Amino acid sequence: MDADTIIVGGGLGGLAAAIRLQAAGQRVRLLEKNERVGGKLNLVQAAGYTFDTGPSLFTMPWVVRELFATVGRSADDVLDIVPVDPVCRYTWPDGTRWDHRTALPELIDEITRLSPDDAAGFFRFMAFAARIYAVTAEPFLLSPLRGWRDFVTPAFVRDAPALDPFHTLDQAVRRYFKSPYLRQVFNRYATYNGSSPYRAPATFAIIPYIEFAEGGWYLKGGMYSLARALAGLAAELGVQIETGAEVTQVCVEHGVARGVRVAGGRELRAERVIVNVDALHGLRHLVAPEHRRRWTDRRIHRFEPSCSGFVLLLGIDREYPELAHHNIFFSPDYPAEFKALFDLQVPVPDPTIYVAATVRSDADHAPAGGMNLFVLVNAPATSDRFGWEREAQGYRDLVVRMLEHRGLPGLSQHIRFEHRITPADFAARYHGWRGALYGPSSNQPLAAFLRPPIVSPDVRQLYFVGGATHPGGGIPLVLLSGKAVAVAIEREQGVAS
Ligand SMILES: Cc1cc2nc3c(=O)[nH]c(=O)nc-3n(C[C@H](O)[C@H](O)[C@H](O)COP(=O)(O)OP(=O)(O)OC[C@H]3O[C@@H](n4cnc5c(N)ncnc54)[C@H](O)[C@@H]3O)c2cc1C
Image (cartoon, rainbow, N blue to C red):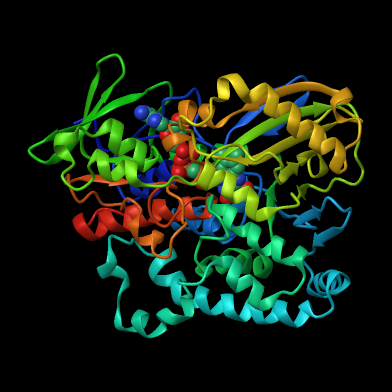
């Protein structure tokens, strides 16, 4: 046996599971296809600029603190977790600007400035969402969900109406806010799991609830410091981490996962296999069809992916003083944006543009007088309706032009370094299913229950961890997924923390 547990993929979910299982006495071997771990949380450093290439906002820091504490360490010894204020600066095409401030009096001032009636609506919205959080946190976010039976308890059935799953997030937001600006701000949170506010259930009001109640955070030095910290902890505990090792197949014997085959032909054996690759991709490409009675190709192809992203990393040689650490330049027609992404499945002609400038928190992320702009536009999952190889340059030009119109004049003249990541790159580099950033979309009322489960129903000793499985995408949920899989293994086999 090469290890007790083999983990395929060194994303945050794989690292979190590795840490918990190794600390519980397992021998864990983690195989990552790329040159470094971190998965979608990654970095580019060039020409004096440092860019995070994936997540830029860190929420629910208690999740990472709990992970470290579980294995007897302190996250604060290795990570400098700092609040970001404003959490985000929003700008509209008509020049209106709104800051999400963290201190309540300033936040209420900001809300009242845009819409005096909406301050009371904000408190009512938070009470509505707090109730959803209270009902879902323990059974859904913090426990391993293997299916309906884990969730549908008498208490849950009693509280289920509070989840409001048959209204959309947009319908809920309209109940509480009159201002079209604030409605757009609160609707935007559906994109935190790559979904549309006009289709995702109102249950996702918990996403803005968490951000407004707890704040938004940054990791000094760059978001990649989280991957470094987790990899360092895993290695210190004894996890064997091998990069440049692409798994081509999960080996199944008599219905039981017994190891993996690595590119080049090597076979490694283990008691169990945990797949941290996007679960839809992992099922389709790593588990042979004859071992997938329930998770057939047909079922996998029926899933609507969450949206992908078009990213530009722009190292510029000037300052834009109006840029905060996180900025959103909203599009004028938000419904049209989601129609393009999910119905037409084409890039948005007039998109909302997110710009992060970590240089606001880490001065050495750009040469003096310059800025490191991480520009992200929601993009459709890959399909035969659009070819990024041909169209990426044109779309890049459109995004830069729009930024120039919406608040960054002269941008194109000041770009000194540039790197682009398309949905096709997300698919090729990290094996996101059709380039999706958050696994399946949550564009229907019960989507949360339809995601691939963490425990394979088809193959014994095969598990899934990460953003495409339970409880979902985004840093904190993916780390919680690592906990869920470790707890599930413990319950089944008595081995994990
Ligand atoms: C542009 C962007 C912006 C985002 N913004 C935010 C944000 O602001 N806040 C937030 O919380 N989240 C954000 N996210 C989401 C967050 O990054 C992800 O949810 C999370 O990092 C996913 O972790 P994971 O463990 O599911 O897997 P992944 O990161 O997908 O890791 C899977 C790993 O498996 C490896 N792999 C794939 N196939 C194989 C194979 N065959 N053999 C071996 N290894 C393999 C991949 O290389 C990868 O390292 C963002 C993501 C992106 C891309």
